[in-house]
Image 1 (cartoon, rainbow, N blue to C red):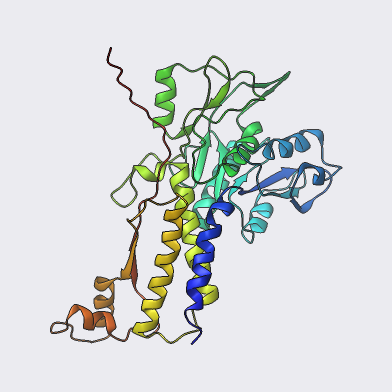
Image 2: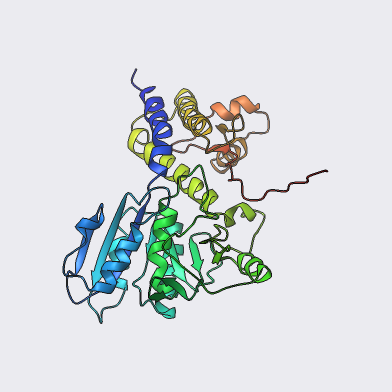
Length: 353
C-alpha cells in the first residue's frame, strides 16, 4: 500500500519551503562581444572572465542580495547586435524567479519582456521580471523607476540597476518583505517628496528614497494597479505573489511527479491527495508563510457536480457525499482556502501623555 508516501513528499516540500524561499534565482540577459551563450553562476568568482566591465559589474550587483545573496544567477549572453528573443527562448526552458534585461535595455525590449512574462505565467511557468520604467499593470512585473542612483563616482539609470534590485528581491526570505531594505552601497538617489513617493507606489512603481541616513526601498510592490474581484490588492505585494508562486509550483510539481498517472482515481485516493496537500499547507503555517489554522482543502463539490451533469448524470437526487464519491474519470476537482501572511509595513502608534 504505497500511496501514503505522497504525504511524505508533500510534507517534505513544506518543511523545505522556508529554506528554498531564502534564496531565489536571478536570470540575466547580457549583450557582449565575448562569452556568448548560457552560464550558471553560484558566486561572483564564476563570472565569465571575458565579459565587458559594465556587464561584469552588473552581474556582481545581482549577487549583493539582501538578507542572503541569490541562490544562483543564470546568464544568457547574446551578441551586441542580437535580438533578445534568442535569450527569451532559452529562458523559457529554465527555472528561475526574476529576469532582467541587459543594462542598456530599451523601452521596446522592456515591453517585449513584460509580454513574455505574461505569456509564460499563463502557461504555468511562474517567472517574474524587474524592468525599468515599465508600467505593465501586472503582478509578474516589478516596475523599477528610480533614477540618478549614485554609487561612489558612478551614476546609474533604472535599467542599469535592475540586476541589483532583482538580486535584492531574490535574497529576501519569504517570511519578510524587502520594504525598507537598505542599499548600503548607494549614496544618493533622485529625491522625491513624501507625496511623490506615495503617488509612485500607488502607480505600481518600485522606488528608492533617502531617509536622511541611507537609501532604501520605499515599498515592495509590483506593477499591478488594476485590481479585480479575483485579483485584489494582495496581488500588488511582491511577498504575497512570491508565496502564491511557491505554493502553485510545489503542489503542481509534486502532484505531477508523485501522483498523476500513478494511482486509480478513486474517492479514497482523492482523500489521500487532499490529506497530503493539507499537510503541506500546515507546514507552511508552521514556518510562518501562511496564517495558522486557516488552510482548508477538499473536493470542489460544485465543479464535480457540473462535470457529472456534462457526462449525462442526473444529480438532482444525489446527496453531497454521493456527488463527492462519484466517478469522475481522470478528473480530480479540488478547492482550497489559505491566508498568506503579509509583513509588518505600516505601524500606527498613539502615545498618550
